[in-house]
Image 1 (tube, rainbow, N blue to C red):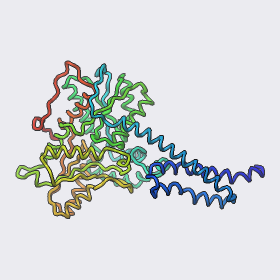
Image 2: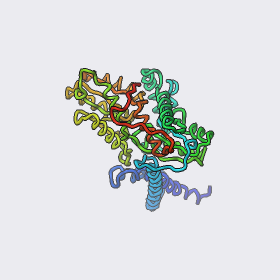
Image 3: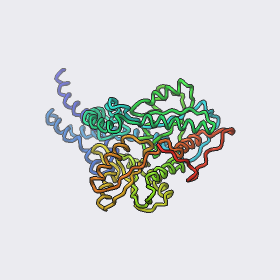
Image 4: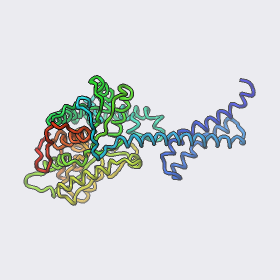
Length: 451
């Protein structure tokens, strides 16, 4: 390196630092309210580093405007990159949100389509817990924080290291693993049977995000069977980008890689379907003893929590939850003594409130003695219901003075729920002329099924 190059080196390093450091800062800033304290912080966050480098390298003060110029360029590049990502996410989110209107798909034979039930999955055994949690915490669609795109993998490894033993203890309390695989398999078979009863020959399978079968497995299954169409049907009735959105995203990514000619159909929502609502009503009424009235019991509708940033980005999840609860209450002819709460929050991020734990404590302070927790966003019983609600919240309630704590069972394979899934399929893939009539749903006409 000659003397001229050596003299330029500090200035080149300082300019590059001003540019490169501000790209991720501009990326983060774009997702904060304009002129807010966080917005101002991310604009100026690089200044101490640039000042330190300038003093250390001994560059001239006259070079400061150049540093400012490259810092602005970095902020603009980062901001534009974030806007492009957000535009792509918005477009994808609109594709993923189930449509309420009925769109007839003409010319699709049952043999050409594959129905895929979607869920997050869970570890079958305690030995599977670390891998499950690593996949879960590494997912940038589910967990985000400042600079997460840089530190996500490290964050996931730390969480797995600190949480695995505790998670394994919780899974051990419910049998040494999650029952979600067997529950989802049962729902898949029940939907297949209901579609067959209606004269349909549609194939039904399921895919998980964080445990087998994965998206790649299902796409390979579709390719091997020569399917031309895939209908994703979420087992998260209330749409969120964190759940249904991520499921569909990874299915599409896998299809692009392994089977690019596979065409995706849009699935209809069913969170207001009469059969789905009736399933919850039945589960609630199962908890009422012969000698008492449901009015004697305080209803707590407990949904899985969601980080607040999803809500600020327009996620419809909590609003759809409230619509489902409203319809359930109408069926129960219930006007008061109920509340919606959220459970399963993890980490230091802000989550939507109130939390189920806080609600239980508040009800105890009001001298409420009988409460019934209704797991309104769950369609299977697994660690969030059998452990978190029925064991941990039960212990909390009893310690707080609530004498009568109950939890309604998940709807699992309730015939109303399976009918809702089948109707969602047939909205997108209408039955042929020779198919038998659908099961009519009207309140007490639904058969009861206990799981």
